[in-house]
Image 1: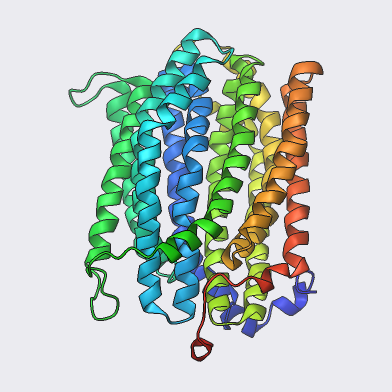
Image 2 (image 1 turned 180 degrees about the vertical axis):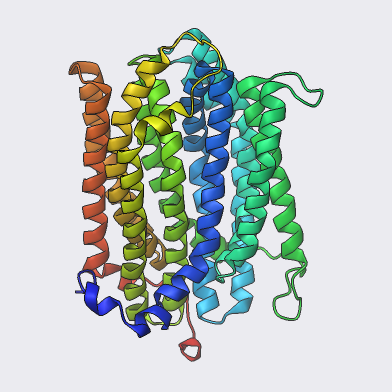
Length: 473
């Protein structure tokens, strides 16, 4: 009823009331700006690499997405601390709110050890076993290795970021992240091209710059965490280990981490399958996805804010307000996705030619542009579907319905997307445009499944935290 009540939704209460558009936007806009800055940073990174060599930008996608695949489980599990913080904040339980942050740090330590000692072995073995051009594989390995330190820093910082974002204090989180992204741009320029006395490191330098910025951002958020007003929440109090909270974080956070692993893993396989179609198809796909990040990544910021609002109102035992907030967030995302569709359809060639290399790199760039325009059309349709999927998935995540998210996403990613991609690229002589049309179709299936799950209301029965009766508001 709420979904289609368009006329009813535009009244004063829905804008300024609890769970209204104003509250969602207040929490969301720093996260959206932060996400946008991250996508701009990636865009500039790919742009620099494209100007350095088309092979560099082609290697960036498979190596970058493999790196993210192998550490995203730990990152998302650590970031789930924000959902616990949100519910404790809504329940006005400051003591357990702080304990949830320490539980997140416990998980982050284990994550850092795994990323340092296990992921390099797995990643290099996977890259070495591909059928990609040997020169391409060498660049992929360089980028993968140079990105690894950033994964450790991101996981270590996640619980500290969650302390603020879970309370709805998203502005300091955004400021620190934006600062890191802005710093990444000149560092990329220096390391990739060899300026300011540095040797030109190409794609390896791009990964080094990202790792440096992630480390500095981690230091900044830790300092800000310990500088809080100790009368309100004693963040400088001696660290405490609470195994019950750590296990609870893992119980609800691990399915969220596995869901991201499954989702990104499917796209990793997609990237490698497209790589088998040749460097021209791969370069066009990388350029299209780099452009798409500008429009897509802010949706994740809105989804994160949706999860925070839902968690806070569930902590206050106001599930009705939480539900309405999700549908309002979806309307905001739908308007944003529609604007992206218009830009993709009207200016595809102008967007693609922005990545033209400065020198010949052995790839016909005119053919890359031609392919990229068709891929962008499919990406526009995919974005429209993701505007539904990510918002309702954010609502489910804020309620703790992470196991259902994992199972449903596994079904669509590995039951539909992966088998279809293998069929199209290995047995059926499909074009790159047909491949991306199929990806957009899978996005539509995803969107409908998550809409159905949220509408079922089963998330209302989940109790992620224990609440004294007096904490209900």
